[in-house]
Image 1 (cartoon, rainbow, N blue to C red):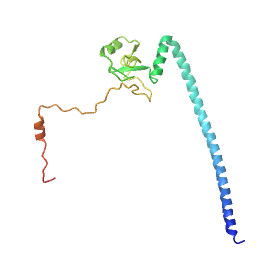
Image 2 (tube, rainbow, N blue to C red):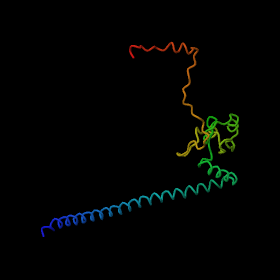
Image 3 (cartoon, rainbow, N blue to C red):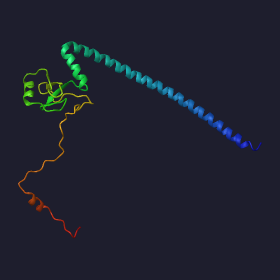
Image 4 (cartoon, helix red, strand yellow):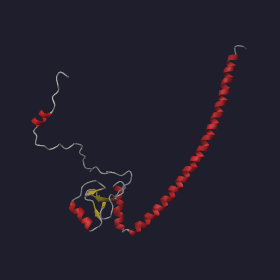
Length: 182
């Protein structure tokens, strides 16, 4: 009997641990269920708000679509689908804000003088003169930016100062290192 006492004590300790862990698991499951309910309530509220905004945006798009000609609307939708959601871009400083390529100055002047529907010769987006629309820059979505591979290269080289001093004079003007200090 004394031989089984340590085994019984270990069994009791194991049973107590099982009871404790069972209560812990039950408490955690209740906590999880309460959090899920709270999260579900919060998320369902967010979903309802987003669905209401979606319905309002669809109604607004329907009204706007009716005011635009069918052919133009079809062309807009084609460009929108092909150009990552940006179909209309401004021209700022003779640069298309859709593809960021420079446009011919005469092209930009014509658009400024007689505002009309024109397409960018590079990216084929619908473009307008920002100055004519009294805008500094066309609004772009947060994820937008250069979407085409036609971005102009960025020069990181510093321009050299132009002087008439020859290379030999520039080298001679540099202080010489003292060999004793090396």
